[in-house]
Image 1 (cartoon, rainbow, N blue to C red):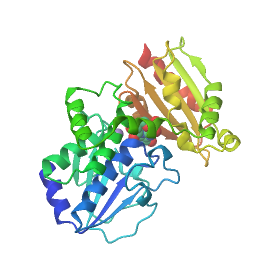
Image 2 (cartoon, helix red, strand yellow; image 1 turned 60 degrees about the horizontal axis):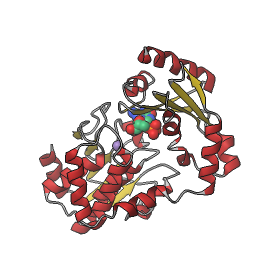
Image 3 (cartoon, helix red, strand yellow; image 1 turned 30 degrees about the vertical axis):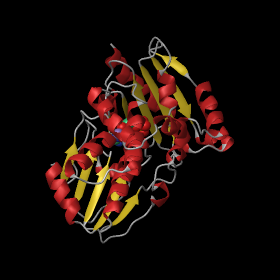
Image 4 (cartoon, rainbow, N blue to C red; image 1 turned 90 degrees about the vertical axis):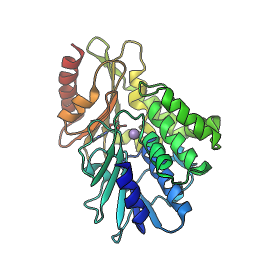
Length: 315
Ligand code: 5GP
Ligand code: MN
């Protein structure tokens, strides 16, 4: 698959790079790594797209971040999707070009023409690193910075189960290429806005425990966003905060969307496979981090349905 993707990328003159809606550091970092690498080759027109209104500002230090555009038209001879398990998560109706998909979600639906999906990888960033390196594409300091940032984003700075010695070896190579780990950590975690901290306080204030305190639920409403002035992406760590409580196995964030939909984020600690629960509701994700969106139901109804499933998983 690497070989087929390499040939397709080398041949293409106009390339579209796109990542999933509500992007995280892995989606942004892996697509920007490819963007920077292809820019260096010079012979292609490359456009990088994410259709979300609200890109997390904690990643604005990544080279090329300001080039990410919300829209695109036709005329591409190749498109590449990053960190995306299903076509609908790209947030576009269609893409008129052959599609390569780089991903590491166990729930990936295999929607791309050339699927490069391996759930054994910590992150799409790690996978893109292997691809760029083995295919002989340029990996300079900027590309390395994007890849390293993607990796720390999806491993919680090397805290999760997807971390192994091979990953540290790759990160060591990225540091040798010029990445400064403390700079990256500062940029991602030490530039919080007052609005974001105020929002976190409001979210934590809603924390409620269920199922013998093994499930912690927090809520985010549109009113909370208005009163703090925070952006929806400022709530990205909310489910992790709920999970961090000693007794808790699963942290749940219920988020009210502007159109009234309820977006649910699930995070588990040790044994519950939350991607199974998310799949039941038409979503997806990983064993320890998954999500889905429900239409036409209120928080209480959604919560009851989620708790019914989690009760079985925790039994
Ligand atoms: P989050 O809860 O931060 O939105 O997402 C956690 C994980 O679940 C991510 O890997 C994300 O890609 C996946 N995920 C979240 N929402 C959805 C969804 O609606 N559909 C699918 N397929 N995956 C989702
Ligand atoms: Mn990822």
